[in-house]
Length: 332
Image (cartoon, rainbow, N blue to C red):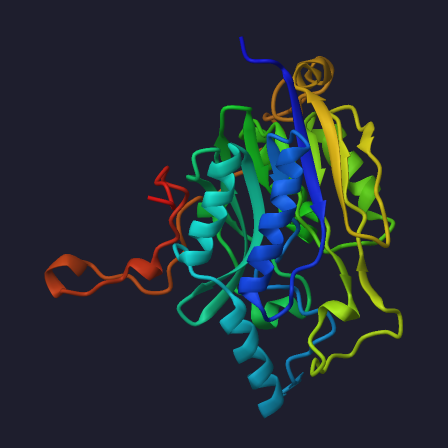
């Protein structure tokens, strides 16, 4: 019988902004460290591969864009990754080499659009899930596209059901409900939100969903930015201070937030705590009132262009689709 005790890790670290190969190298070292600590599930922050260019406005004012802003976007666009692509292969190899489940926030490039995405790999290096952030926040909407319901899934794995909800998506009650309805057990919340209000939000979600919550936040300083970075940032050298945490299904903090430094947080999770929590609260089961409240979730890909018979026309429109993890190994 598989042990109900699972060790997990959340990585609080910075990428190397605008240098994706160097970021991959850093991720490999950090994943090696987390795996050496015994973690079976390792979670990295939002936008770890591709970066979160905090402070950039991309030259946008209402009704105008600047040439400098367009160049900033070009640079950011080139730091993003294709799925599939060589960077995905590298991530898959990390998961496979250590036999771990791996969740990584990436900036995904699809045609001319970028998406804030979370990738989940199994211990064989296969993509279990790909989730595109549904609602970018504020100025993020200038540089990231909107995801749709086709990637709003929870993946079955050998350790349990894993789902990812990115940053302020966690403030969307109906999205959370959709995750609970899919039986999420390991609710991963990659983020760059380092405010004091983030911890109580994570505790609420764990208590509400009776699931484990693993939140990984970046720790980013001005030293992680290139010298020519032109951003409106504060005098504080720390731009994203961390605050990663791990919470149990009754809202108890298993790994306290750490601020102001790079760190890997570990915790041992007892899956039996989920059933103990559901005993008196299952918001999509015995504690629901479907006679009064019901949620409809559209999981169809929302493609801007469709072709009635692409095969006969010789057109290739694969990039217009929003594929989920298909169980194919990225390292084959």
